[in-house]
Length: 78
Image (cartoon, rainbow, N blue to C red; front, side):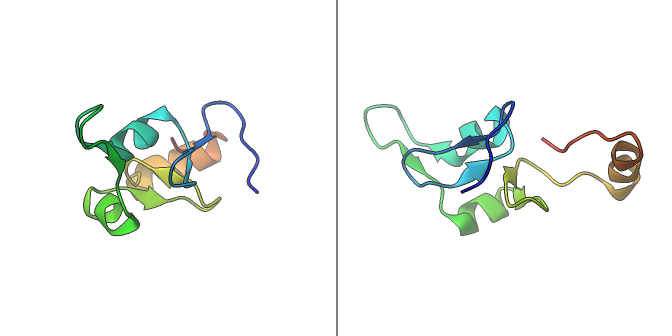
């Protein structure tokens, strides 16, 4: 089980882990009360989402130049 701190969360339906609320919300598709569901992994990848080094889904990969800057300054991906 992964440690959930800050905005990190786990979906209660599909059990996937998310680095923040944004990728969690993106992965839920369809109309509430009608056909709401979780995206499968292939759909999340097609939507530009990816898994970070800790195994949490993120909404998009950071460009290398931004990632290098954040790593240098100890900023976590969201």
